[in-house]
Image (cartoon, rainbow, N blue to C red):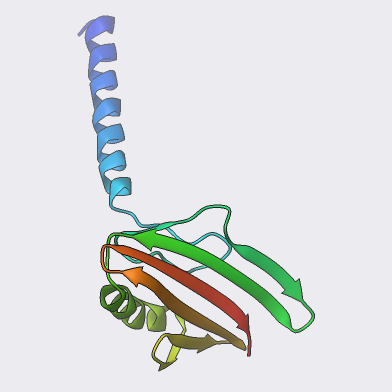
Length: 123
């Protein structure tokens, strides 16, 4: 096997790995900026430069926004299933608490054009 064949084989292998990694990342939702471990629900994307992060003596206050082609029921179901695995306790509706903090999720707009506000504050 000559140098050209080895180089072509390694290039093809690297390209395949790049494609597989990219395909896996395309489905990833990611996390909301400013929150340590708050995943974005499917079909939501963060609205950049609209959030707020403030540290106070009582604790931190964080606000973030996301929008997407989904509905409030689907997003609410996602968080009610996902957040308990991250240590959050579901209180009622769209309220969760964990370690002296409360997370409130508010929904605005309609199905297909939903806006979601996430507010984290000390209890």
